[in-house]
Length: 343
Image 1 (cartoon, rainbow, N blue to C red):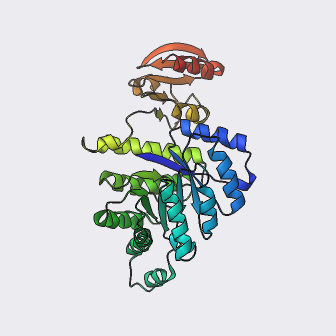
Image 2 (tube, helix red, strand yellow):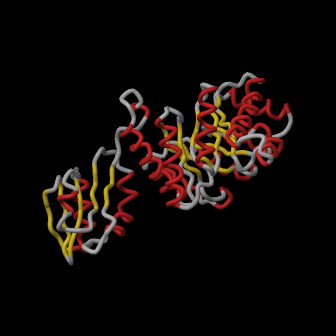
Image 3 (cartoon, rainbow, N blue to C red):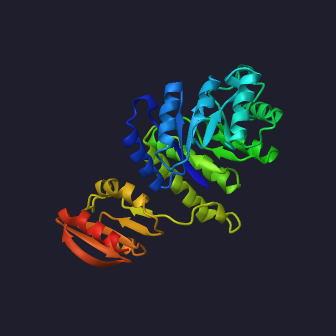
């Protein structure tokens, strides 16, 4: 089970070295696939150069112009996201599928609730067709084009901003077809709303064995999309039956942190923000506690492999509930880093 995200900016304006470095950091956080919008041939050239600089599988998201897809396939780009219904006539679709097949490159059929074919959109509007069924019908039309040309190396995504429609569409599709599914709620909103909506949809689908890759779409940064996706997969692993558990990651850092209250004596919010990216980049199966109260912190988090808390001008580093260092709060980050390195 893989977590994906999508690059938030335009390829035309990226510094390739800086972008490659950020892609490497995203990979360390266990992002498995990174998708880029490719609106023109200039963007295809940039993505092509970037694909040769990184080890992360990159996906080109293409609409309207089949020549962009053909150019992207000249580079070591891992996958194309395509809507064959909007890139032109039969010969253009055949050209893309033929080249992808010759290179053994998969294609993702992407269907979005906000851009359905006009006839399906009208039926949804007049109440003669449910939104979820419309998503499935749109996917089936695209699959029929692929099947017509004998192209079988594809997966499907059907996303809506509605949690209910996303769940229902993917349930219908999974009952009808044995085709890999990329799942998630699209246009899910800002951080809190987006995580909440995606969690409901993804936990429901994953618990039913539906979904092969996920993205938590947020009006927020890529790092938070990856973190949210990882946390959802770890939660799904915790509630999955023994037969299904192997689909989910079994390693990773678990961060528990205090929300703060009137007893709080340690800046858990700031400390968590400073350390979050590094912690999620660790290939360790550990629990890290960042607690706000020196009275209850080590006790409440006594199962943690390492933790930090404080009161006043002092901070405590503890392991398995036992305080191992007491330092000035100004030294908390340094001491925490030293103890983390020793794990």
